[in-house]
Amino acid sequence: NAGVTQTPKFRVLKTGQSMTLLCAQDMNHEYMYWYRQDPGMGLRLIHYSVGEGTTAKGEVPDGYNVSRLKKQNFLLGLESAAPSQTSVYFCASKDGGTVVGANVLTFGAGSRLTVL
Amino acid sequence: QKEVEQDPGPLSVPEGAIVSLNCTYSNSAFQYFMWYRQYSRKGPELLMYTYSSGNKEDGRFTAQVDKSSKYISLFIRDSQPSDSATYLCAMSPSQGGSEKLVFGKGTKLTVNP
Image (tube, rainbow over all chains, first blue to last red; front, side, top):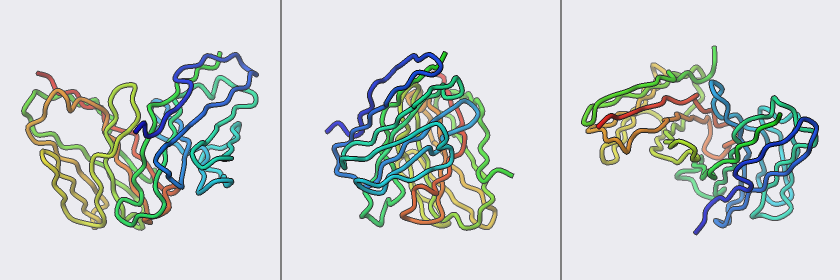
């Protein structure tokens, strides 16, 4: 059981380039999330999805787009990368149906992105 | 005032020490409180989960919530070098809306052998 898998683990981009981060979960979870983690800023929610075909904005959505075409996958896109998007990106998922532990997220190992 | 405040540390203790990690918050609507542990270059993993006020114990770990003071704590007894990690508190006003989940910035803990 792999849990939440993120690809790629590391990437270096030049300003203006585009890229897509892929998150895959094998737990049949309804909800999926993309966070970024920066020193001194903590975890901040970028976008999230409450089910296949749905997406919604989080706290810091500007410069990012997402898609959830399949329940198990959640893609995060950067159309024109900027140095301010240098960060560690975490994908997370959770089962929408449980009462106990309803806020418990399972995180991936992270994707380290550097924009030069 | 930020919704959740957490001292970033770093905190360095000898093996076997009792460790106290804390967060304060301003939103009285928070009811669900979590502690995540994050090892270096890894994703956060859930350590403790509590609802409303009170204590919860799991092995060497105890989570404490004082809603009247808007203060939560995580105690680690007999700390081990393997406990060296960053500890993130997180809280939410509702059981289903993880989009409303607010994280502290994390406290980095080092347990020295």
